[in-house]
Image (cartoon, rainbow, N blue to C red; front, top):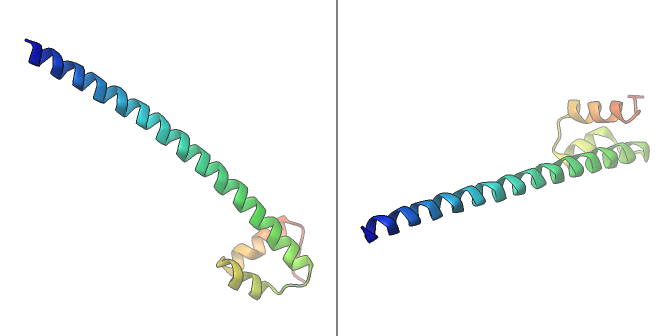
Length: 83
């Protein structure tokens, strides 16, 4: 009977560890998503600033890896219209 009790205890401990690990993973993912949102916002601001300082759209596209259309959308949202 002790082997059964030990096995039950080990199983319960493993399930508890899994629950804790899942909660930690969820926290890490949520933090990473927040970091991505912050970095994306910063990048958009830098794109707008670069355009206002005279950087050509094609050079912004090359520097960021974004498509021309995405850069245009970011610039328009930042109040920079095509001249």
